Amino acid sequence: MAGRDGLHWADYNDRQAGRSVRELCAELIGLAGPGAGRRAVDLGCGAGIETRALLDAGWRVHAIDSAPGTAERVLATAGADERLRIEERDLALPDELPPADLVYSGYSLQYLPPESFAPAWRRIRSSLRPGGWLAVNLLGDRDEWAGTPGETFLDEPAVRRLAEGLEVVKLVEEDADGPAWSGTKHWHVFHLIARRGA
Image 1: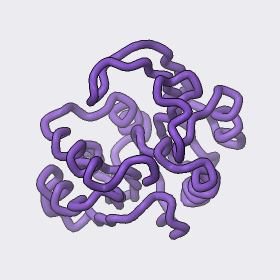
Image 2 (image 1 turned 90 degrees about the vertical axis):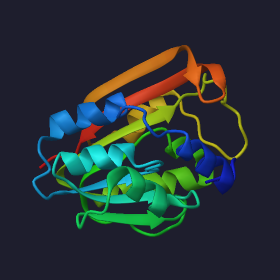
Image 3 (image 1 turned 120 degrees about the vertical axis):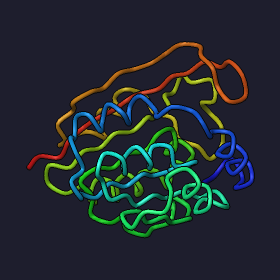
């Protein structure tokens, strides 16, 4: 991903061990119900914490991240599982995503440069099977990091445009100071859960 090199993300992901499953992912799993062998894509899977939660809920998971050592890191968290496929690649690459019944991306897509974000979003949308679920955390234009070169920050109308044609189940805007890996910062985040029609 643009803006920060792979070693930065490898270090960040190594320090995620032991944290709980992100709230948006846990909520998504509850809404989507048992995986029952359906396919989930975890974009920007990091340390594999959400990957493990999806596997535990019965999903087959395709986990993707650009950080060096992703496969080893995810296997250490999620364990070897025949339902798990791990891919180390940049989310900006034009490769299509596998057809999915659930796509989750927690705090990852903002690190795509604007020129890569739109095509990546189209690939995400086109990968969703009928009835498929989508959940993402997107950074807003009032976030402390807004304006960082090579990264994407969105206002509310832009987020709503991204969800056009989907059933929006949840759209919550967070605009407050809070903890970050580097210390306290001002967060402006859109937490989106949506579903493609059957």
